[in-house]
Picture 1: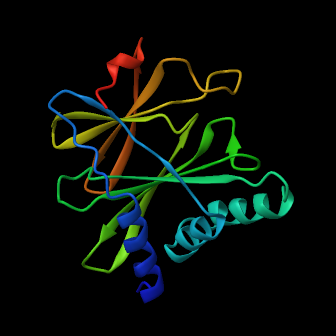
Picture 2: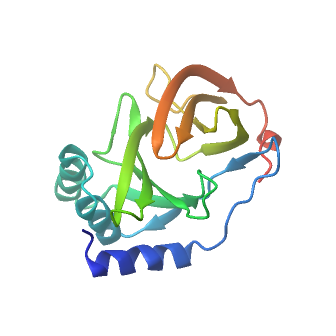
Length: 185
């Protein structure tokens, strides 16, 4: 069961990011991430049962790089169409990224159990696109930028993930966008 303080924290974050991104049919929406404090990141990943290795990596990076702390960014988007925005946390910077990218964590409120369920992925950057194409057996498509062979974010390439009711699955499909104007946000 979540602590009351943590639920209040989530409500505060939701209120801070109350500008919803509404996608039109067959439109791409670029998630707008906002920086959050190290304390807010620590509270979110420690109070929700995120895998210990991610929480430990975060704490280790804070201790190991005191002058160049890792960064936490957060975005909100209703991926299920249920009126409850999912929270997407992107952790980057010193100690938080590897060959596959940086930590990207999707949280979904499970009102029945009063807890946040989560799914994790790796991303080369915070350039995450929501593809408004729900014709794939109820799955919502998400485009996540991978890292290329040099360890940098791949230029104009994204990996397609599918989201449905808290289940995040990576596909082998690579999506390419040539211009920023391909985004409808």
